Amino acid sequence: MKKLLLATAIAASVATGAHAATTYDVSSNITGLQLWLGSNNLLTAEPGGYFSGVQFGGTAYDANDDGIIDNSNVTMTGEVGFTAAGKPIKLTFNLSGGNYAAGSGTTFSSGNVDVQLYTNLNTGYDPANDDFEWIPFSTIDASTTNLPFLAGQVGHLGTNSTAGLQLAPGTHALPGLWDGQDPGVGIDNAVAALTLLGNSSGMFLDGSTTLTAQAAPAVPVPAAAWLFGSAMAGLVGVGRKRKTQA
Image (cartoon, rainbow, N blue to C red; front, top):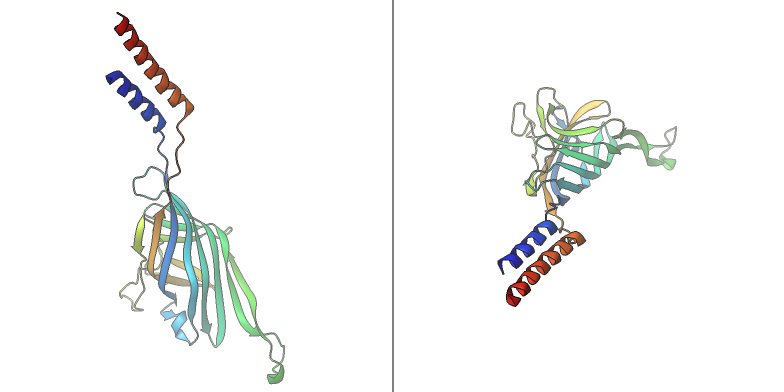
């Protein structure tokens, strides 16, 4: 009996010896967003500021199940709009390839941020025939200019630092917003300092990110393990038969 149990245990050990990584689905709930240019929050400096559909997605991986994310493929999508000198401006985020470095943050290496202006296409002023449309102004290509959402980078003021986009299993708060004072509450909370319209701008986010573990796929038992276990059980049976005959 003991030999049979040993054979079964060895076969089970062989079958489950491989230890798979844990894959997480990334999601977010962003409840607040600031885009600071110096000490001016672009979303509130003039009427018309908003953010819509801004969220993180994608996947993250814990290679050895130690609770620390080792790498990821994070996306960032959504729209941010504001008015500057009376002119509406719209930023559309479509970033991907966000790779996480433990304790540091996330760097986006593909996708882009499109900047558009709402402007009159007519060359002259004609109140009866104004034709306003969104037109492309510039594009930030993350494949040529990686966008670091990292901790410890120089912030948009030059005297503050960034908190980066951190990832961990479960639900965790984003760094949060800034009160606009220097020094002040949340001055180092920016997830990133981005160059927009030729100027360094600090992006601050309130809300949370959630990493949800995907269901582990069923691990097929290798044929060799079944054969090994069957062989061991057969040897035990032969041993018992010989003992009975004796």
